[in-house]
Image 1 (cartoon, rainbow, N blue to C red):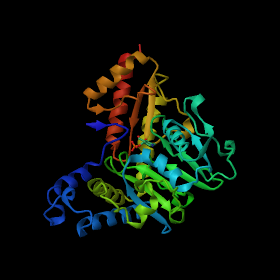
Image 2 (image 1 turned 90 degrees about the vertical axis):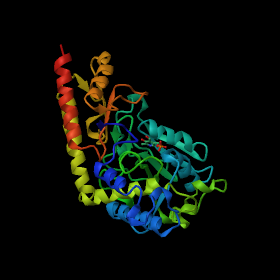
Image 3 (image 1 turned 45 degrees about the vertical axis):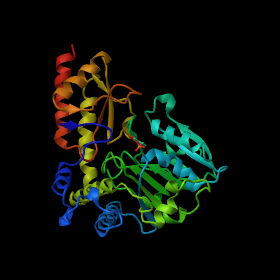
Image 4 (image 1 turned 30 degrees about the horizontal axis):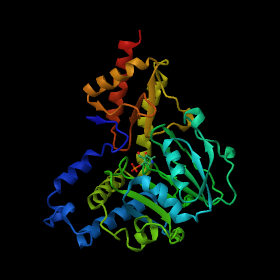
Length: 358
Ligand code: PLP
């Protein structure tokens, strides 16, 4: 099956096979990773290797901490303001889709967020030019969602913030190189590009740690997690192990520049098929900001959409239905989607069009 789900999403087959091969007996220790103490030397070696591989993949500067947390990116919508602001601080949000909007709304409980740009009136099909951003000079941070999973818009470069830049990279994490030093915090749920659900990765400039609002729950306080190397309480051990296997695989592929080349190629093939369909398929997103990861598209004849999804599933291409809030179709083509999956989808799209474009 080629699984085009937006997340949890497809994982590299070789990673799953490796996990299967050591399911009962990790590295000859006689235990599954699921059974190990998170404080034992076996698991410590797993989490430390995962962190060091991620550091080398993203070239993370030494003055940044890497945290493996729980609660999904949604929890970070609260943790970010709780850790970085006082209740009356102003912060800026660029709202380019549903996820940016959720982050903005959650922040209002803990500080004073301003939406300085919203793509809502254009149905979230664009990213602002950076000149269009009227940042609040004393805003504590500028928050963006680097890739909107539902609407399929992606920042191709990043604005210079008045103060700090914070990015939700859940759905394009490790899909291409990123200059981490431009950011105060990068956070991402693992379940799209780097592992199973249950692990949330936070990369934070270390000097920003230690200023949480007094009411911050311990589980949301970055200092607690940084001081304890992500082992303050029981972490999502198996998920972290799986992320580690994915990082090893990304390194073996040649690192994120090589991964990006593959992603550019896959996305190019799919967008070309949509644009070359003479309007039978349409992608509503402005071309220059189309996501390499999540490709939303519609049919000129919406009554055919259910049939498209059903027939594709019969051909073993699943999860192509668009998010319930926007309809249409969406093909999520994360790192682990092979080129063959995209080629098969494009061949199916052409065949479907030939049969229905009367
Ligand atoms: N941010 C983005 C860009 C997402 O795509 C998602 C989930 O799909 C979230 C945040 C929420 O993540 P979680 O479900 O891990 O809380």
